[in-house]
Amino acid sequence: MRKIISILAVIAAGALTSVNLAFAVFTIEIDEGVVRGIPIAIVPFGGDAADQFLRSADRIISDDLTRTGRFDPIGEDQHLSKPTSAEEIRFVDWQLIKADYVLIGRVESVEDRVGNFRIITRLYDSFEQKQVFGVQFIATADQMRVIAHRIANAVFENITGQKSSFESRIVYTTTIPNGASGAAEHVLYVADYDGFGPQVVLRSEYPILSPSWSPDSTQIAYSELRSSGARIYIQTVATGERFEIDTPQGHNSAPSWSPDGQRLAFANLTGGNSDVYIYSLKDNKITRVTNHRLIDTEPSWSPDGKHIVFTSNRGKDPQIYQALARRDAATKRVTLDGRSNTAAQYSPSGDRMVVITDQGRGSQVGIFDFKSRGIQVISSTTLDDSAKFSPHGDMLIHVVEGKDRYIKILSPDGRVQTRIPVADGLVKQVDWEKSPQ
Amino acid sequence: MLASGRLFGVIIFLMFILVGCSKPMDGDSSDASADAPDTEASDSAGAEEDSVLVEMGLDESADESDEMNPLDQGAVYFDYDEATVSEQAQEIIRAHAEVLVQNPGVTLHLAGHADERGTREYNLALGNERATSVSSFFQQFGVDSSRITAVSFGEEVPAVMGADEESWALNRRVEITHDLMQ
Image 1 (cartoon, rainbow over the protein chains, first blue to last red):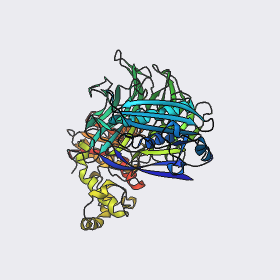
Image 2: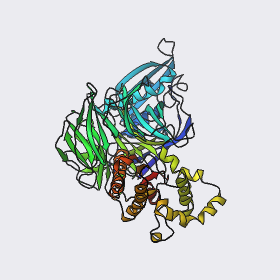
Image 3: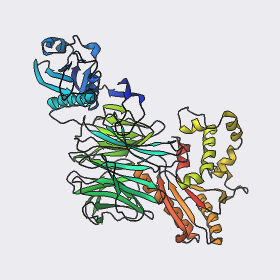
């Protein structure tokens, strides 16, 4: 059974360039099968300033934790009490509704040079009957979402022992069919991972392809598709400055940063051929990695920087192949299952890859396991594209094409699927920041 | 704006009408529905549906029609994930090539496209394969490679916006452009 929660949300305007304010309904779909997350109660925050600040904090925290598939927050309607401070906690109330953990908080007005709100929050273990952590923040109103994500991160880290990606950003491309000039307009946006706070990084009259975030999160590489061919640019997010990299004749696209940030793998298309190359940012040198008369494209680096995986149709159907990241490397086929497997990206730990797989139902998000060599389909949609791991591997993101285009976040097992808001236009591709600030 | 978009504006407009009236619209099926002309215009276009089909080279029963002029066809179409040029497409290419051979000063522009299925980068490469395949046939039919430019737009510039088999079939194409076309 799938539970669907609809949320009416206001998408906040970006700070750099104004983005249309829009109302959007988006959903969290949860497959309520045998596997469940850790039950946690997130109690709406109290205190004299709770309404001015963090009004939806419990919602943001709850959504963050839910998206990973690791937690199942218990609805407010089931809470037996509404504690906002340590003195008000009665563990039996939470044991009765089987909440393993309870998060409470208060927001108070303060006079402080850092900010005018104090947020105190505590996490309890209901059955151990003890506090797991207590933290306090002084903040301004515009830091509300950051604080909420930070609290969710503290909960996730304290309970699972792993880092979350709740404070990371995504980059995505859209096409606005009738832009300001009347012609189609192509836009590159940066937003919080949950789609909030979208900011325009680039508006272009040319389609923008394959945005790829640099490992240090300061730059984005992408290609612009002109009638004369696709060209690769590297743009600094903070300043908007960009430069074109010096590539061979023909189409140059599919840029992908090496983990050390020193090199960019890309595909060059000349004649009917497409091969994988490496561009060195240090000395502008270009190294040809593959040399095959058919399609080799969509390169992506292993976390140790030694290998590159890429899509090739050399065996008739498109599949994933692997090569050493050097000149004229020997290649070997990696994926064996399915009609096609394309656009691979390694998981942060390197033991898995996310691919766009066709197992007979259409294009879906699949996880390839290097040990078992099997592919597990984790998306419920069938026109999927551009799937990427979050920086800590706790979630995945992808685009759904078709009539109604949108971005979805998946838990790694696919149990929880969340649609997130897109600023404007038809969304095309997405990439997730690799090292959140 | 992309050159091919401008040149094929009329054809794309006709295709919107075709898609708009040959199938009941789902309402949300595409932006094209919002831009479609009013009901009267759609009705009158309905009568032309067959001729539009012939022009697009999709109506196989009309293949042998004497009225059909392959030169009127500015595009050839492909199967899913294929860059193989069909016999029907070869005839269209041959007709264009014959005119080009007689007019040596004219240059030929080929633009390869893919439908939205599959990843964007793979489709960019696939559009490139398709344009190159068509280019090879032009060369085989006597057009010098120096007169041909071939590019790919992948799935970035669809001819029609729908997400169904008919729309996808119209989007898997190589557009042929030269100055001798009407």
